[in-house]
Image (tube, rainbow, N blue to C red; front, side, top):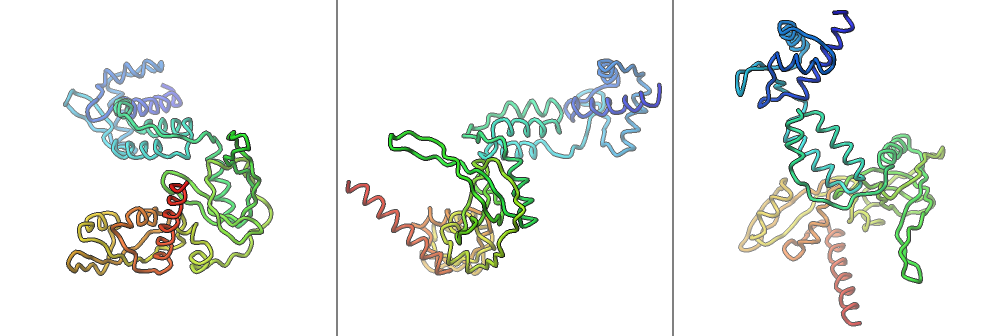
Length: 330
């Protein structure tokens, strides 16, 4: 066999071992030979043993077994089946990805498994969610990240739903020029945190609503934004999605809620219980939904410190109360 033909044989052999074997589905030398024939490659049994030894010498973890039958299989892969299942679930539940982008990514991940393992994953049902229709999401992530690194302003079209005087819903395309600060992933969505050009506020933009993104030559404004800026001038954005640094929070809660607190935050200090009440210091990690969680459980958890966060939750509760009272009175 010519040298080039031998190289091709090794590559085809590696494909066969990767795609058609696992610990429950070994292939005999005869079966491997039959598979090679499908690629118009003829191979004797002894040469297959030698080729497998060559692959093992290269570092491919191929085992020989007699159960469930005599043969060879790929013993170790870059990812376990459970890891691929976890990654495919994350992709399936990521609303910022379109159906096509999700499907393409899942197909690539499944190619890291044997055909039998991939087929098993395909039989597991995944709950359907509303997916984005925007196919530019990869491009948006790349462009925004590059702009953040190089500190350039970004121009894009932002799609927002509006309703006209005849109650017809339509999409308005708003042109935005922003100073990009950070990309965050939150509750299944990607957001760009940015300061609109000429404004003092910080806003969040869903990346799947962004189109026609371009990096401008203009450099970002000199933004010396410390923690106080985020806390005092933009508490709404801070509260909803963006924490610049980890946030230390002191909580007081009902003793019956202890398991929920420790299960959710995992890291805690100064845990004390006195009768029916407990207190603890916890850390809210940046870019998490812990602040929304505290709001949702405000009937069981009281924020002691920091004061601005406690007031923010209290004011939000009052706003909700006033909103419902206003609607119920009409």
